[in-house]
Length: 342
Image (cartoon, rainbow, N blue to C red; front, side, top):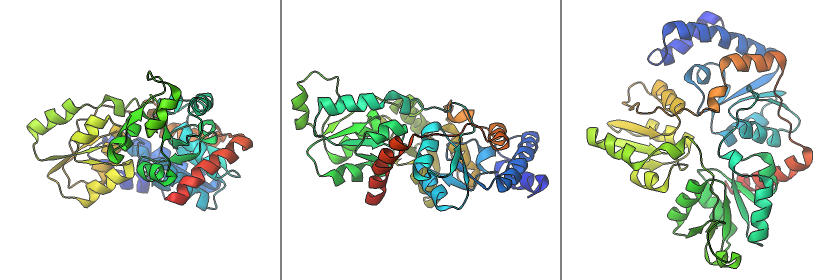
């Protein structure tokens, strides 16, 4: 695809969101990336939180992190460029050990993933012996490696139910754990609560105080204030939001589930309580729908991934993700066990 063809394709989607001069500039970079990925035999994955100019120009696949990693594993491409954050690229490496996985930025961390370490998990296992550990996929490989099973925001309830145990340790997202507890009618405690360790056996879910710094900022007042002006608004919240925010919303689901809900419903207008760029991407894909742009919350880590840095990663084959094989094998078991549940 030529630069002009790339520009026209991007303009069709992004003219309401991005100035024309910026689209032209980004199209030049995107065209160079798309040519170079052929030469490198690479597949580019774009998470739903990527900026619109990137999201609508270079990815071969877009979506949630786990689904992207699984799709990349099924391709015959030798190189995976993951336009997301580090834990996502690690998951791609876990599922594609013989492929080169690149992250376009040197850091691109995650506040939630950074909230817990493998040593923390081992400490929980010691404090609550015999209780299985359910780990959200938004964690680093070393944490997955010492867990029993992983889960996503969309299958967390199903994974917890599959264990058929009196209690589970659910890490690291505090709000997702509380939302799972609310949905299943279970109680929840935290390791720092005042109680004897054995008392946890009377509480089905043992949580951890990790949070997504983006979803943590949404409040019930945000919803109430919007509803005052737009009583007919349909509010969608990610399960990483506070339980009271999820309860006050009309729909809660993973990023892909939120996208599909907007596509498949006909509400007068929508409010998305999630990362801003995803809201922009949904607006671009649904020009006939009224989507309120209240959002001013951009993930600082996702923001590190740009078209310019993606080009640099491919030109220099830099920022390769390395997962030690002993950790990868153990982490893969936790991920695969989740995949088998569905």
